[in-house]
Image (cartoon, rainbow, N blue to C red; front, side):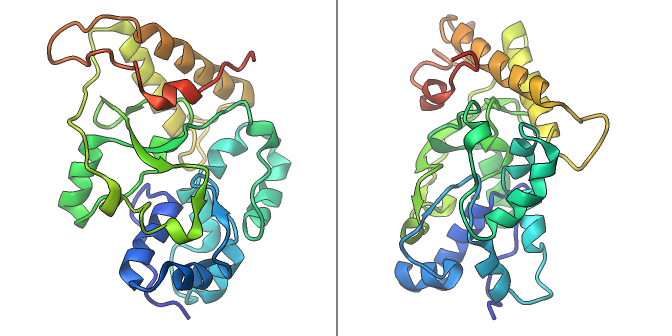
Amino acid sequence: MLSTFPHVYPDELLISVYARFFLRLRATPEMTARLLFGCSTILLKGDLPHRLSHLAAILPPWYRPTVREMIEQHTLLPFYKLCRPYYEYEKHIMGMRTHPYDRGTISQLRTVSTLRYCALCCQEDRDQVGEYYWHRSHQIPGVQVCPIHQVFLECSEIPLLKIRATDLMSASAATSLQPAAPRRINLDDQDHRRILRIASELVASIAPVSSEHSRDRCSIYQLVKESLYLTKHCAHKPPITITEIPKAFIGQEWTRNLVSLNQ
C-alpha cells in the first residue's frame, strides 16, 4: 500500500502530482515508474495520463481524492468531454484506468507542445505550499492568460503529450521552473480584454456542474477558434507602453501549435 503519495494541491495537474512523488520517493526512476504504473517504458500524456487502475490498487482506501475524482478534477478530460457526446464520458473514465485516451474527436483542439505556467501563480504556490506545481487550468486549449492574475501564460520546456515515465522527476515544476517576470495584459486593449474573457469562460467550463457555465460543443470550438484569431491579431500590435508586453505573442511556441478549426 502506497502511503507516501502526495496530497493533491488545488487545480494541480495529475502529472504534476506524479512528478512530486518521484522527488519525494528518491528511488531510481525505473523503480518509481514500475511502482506507479506497473511498467517503466510507457509514454504519458500530461493532459490525460492512463494506467490509473494500477494507482488505485496501491493507494490506501482512505486516500482522497479518489482516482475518479483525480480524473474529474486534475486532468483535462472534463474539458474534452464538452467536445464529445456525453454518453462517451463514462467509457473514457474507465479507459483512462488502463489505456490511453482516444483523441480522435478532440484532434481539432490542438494542445500546446509544452506545459505552461503563470509567473504570479508560481509565486503564490511557493508562498502557500512551499513549492511550484503545474496547474490544470493553464493547459486548457485557448487559455492564453491566467484569469486570476491577468498575466500571459509562459511556456516551459517540458513536453505536454510525450513524457516518459522514467523522466517524471525532470518534469517536476519544482526542479524545472525558473519563472519569468510576469507579463501583464493591457486592460485598455479590447483584444486583450477579450482574450481574458475567453480564458475565464474556458476555465469556468470545467468547474463543477453549473447551468451558468454549461456550454455545448460548438461554443467551445468557437471560443478556441476566436482565441486563435486574437492571438494572431495581437502578435502584430506594437507595445503600448514599456510596461506592456513587447511583441506579446511572437515566438511563443504555443501560438504555433494552435490550429484553425477550419483546417
